[in-house]
Image: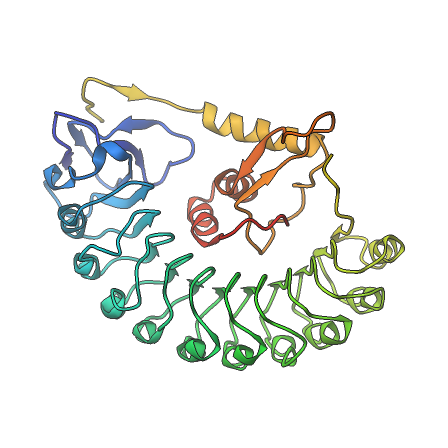
Length: 310
Length: 89
């Protein structure tokens, strides 16, 4: 089995899918023979833009992953990627897609991981994404996405919506994603009113809600999530009163509360939880309170004092 | 067997070593990166220079994610793809 990347210029780097971090890596250049049972990762660089149509595979499924960051692909590149058969992971990060026809991507029926952070992809472009029935992780970070209706057919485990345009009512389809384990909502206009949509997510383990409009209202929903292990409420307006509702959950292990409106009353509440990490920098908890918290949860990493730069 | 073009084989272990060095330095000057991975966003973290005003080093999302997730490639990709913004947590 082999992949021919053409001989005139390199497209980026190439790795084995099961040995990425330890190397070796190769230039994606010329004909690469692939031993039986092994698959390739193609990390494109700017030399690959507009060149992907030159790649030919003598058997589908040789490429496992494609990553492209900070480069401009053209529609023929997307067509080429769509023709690479059983691609499992596709990451197009900071690759402008808003003005391209992205429909070839919806033919990648084997995709499990789709990263579209910073691509500018819109809800309208995402309308056929439901075709990707094997997709488990979808990242729309920093994209101008609001309507999540097209995601309804998917069985997602991770959905990243940080920095998108979603508002409270846009999260209604999320209530149907009962297999969701991780939901990123950092830096969105979401408020406590959206929390009711999360009540039906029994497998939700990680919920970053920092820099949102979440307040003390409806926090009892978070306290009732049976699998919630990591919660980030950094830079929200929650108070010690709200914290008491969250901490009804016995599953919480990591809690990030920096720059919130707590006081030393939070120490006793947090001290009753089996936390492994708790962060209350700039949250209104005094240095004495932080020390007391360290005593109450001695096995936890407690971040409590914000260091000032010189 | 891998047959390469003129540029040939390139083995790079130094990237990993550099990440380790940067994070170790960051910890040495007082930024606590030894805790578990934060759930929030870290676009970049300027580590204060104890003797000057300019940041000593900058830890990017990618370095942060590699440090916390080791060799689990899917988890590193997950971390990088999900983080947004410049929260210092």
